[in-house]
Length: 97
Length: 205
View (cartoon, rainbow over the protein chains, first blue to last red):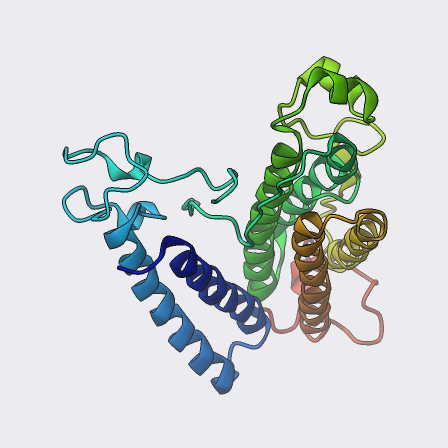
């Protein structure tokens, strides 16, 4: 199982690439090199979000799966019980330890 | 429609309580060139933008600004969450504390409440894009000013990230402006309003 903080850091970095390339492609929609980079980064981001949701809490509603999220049972008030996993994990504005 | 993502765009982990710093940074939440004004400016302007690509860009930059607003609020929150009454009294946070305790409320560093008059949505593509270019530079200047007076690296790093984003947004709005000009009469871009006098646009996409 990956470390929570390093996986989150990877998600932040990959998502930043997707975000920055989105703005670039908004004004350069036919730039093939940027399109290739976007496609790669977007696919990687999807994989990372899924991996994070499996080990820890889902970061988006699309990743919520009560039967398969948070296999580390960390940061949850309902360990071992079927529950709405969207409630798991820290709040983004709290200090991450 | 928006989909929330439970993470900050750039990590924020401030360990040292500092109400003075919070009272300065809050300007980028509710101040004249803050992220609330930025997001509302772009997300309001986009509906009537005659060039589809510019409308899409306004949506995407406006959305990113919402993420920046969340970062600034997280910083103010972390700077004040362990505040003592004594610190509230002495560290330049007293007036804010009386009205809002340590809750987040959009105001400028000088205490002026957030006001929609800080931004414009004029219904003229050329006017609005120039407004946006100026807004990105004004926000950059504000970040420059904050970075000059704040020493804590936990606060400086996210501010430097936000400053860099202003520069990128400026570039993208500049490209959108050129794109729109490409659809207008080059002898006089300001002769008519491309959002209203639609018959004057030659090749809107």
